[in-house]
Amino acid sequence: MIKIGGFVPFTTIDFPGKMATVLFCQGCSLKCPYCHNAHLRSFTDIYEDLSWKELVGFLLKRRKMVDAVVFSGGEPLFQHDLLSAVTELKDLSFAVALHTSGADFPMLDQVYEHLDFIAMDFKLPYEEYDAVYNRKEHVLSSLRKITSGNVSYEIRTTLDPALLSPDKVIAMAEFLRDNGVKHYAVQKCRGPENYNVDPVKASVFFDNRFRNALQTVFPKVVFRQ
Ligand code: SF4
Image (cartoon, rainbow, N blue to C red):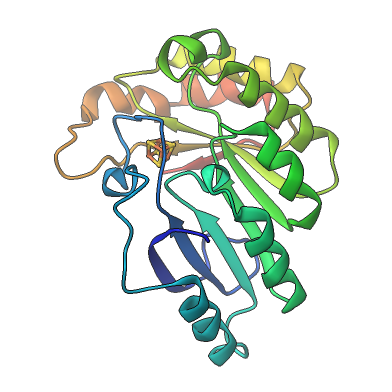
């Protein structure tokens, strides 16, 4: 069953246009240095107080307020029972969104047709993926699935100055554009308390030079500060 590491009962910001409950799935094999949910990376350290059954009960009781569920993480695609969880919620008439790194393509392929929205992180220049995450092929297959399908989506990059430079992000944007991406967003890196994001280095991502360069690749790119 789905391992739930925590949840946010109500949010309007994680699923465009919906009042959603966000589930943080337990388990992720990636190691992003800016991860806010490092406590969720372990696959075994689950939040014992909340079972899937209890969670569905919670959702049904709030059916009039909540119309959607977001699977976030951790990495939801690493949950073996993701498909049954998603279809159960769809049968109950909830809209379902997925927040993912695209790190397990076969699972994305299985759940794709049941989803209503996907937000996928594109974290690094594609050629660096194998050195850091060892998920290069999964990420490209996931990207192609998402951009060639009918489910609403957004591809996102977190602008961590310790990992990325403006030139790298522009090259990433060009890669995404050339692979069919139409909806792209970049977001300010807000690491956890013990992760220092150098404000001077980070500021280059929000000056006009970078903005203009990125907008020549994606005229409608979303900047989140
Ligand atoms: S993919 Fe997400 S959950 Fe996994 S380490 Fe990176 S930020 Fe954290």
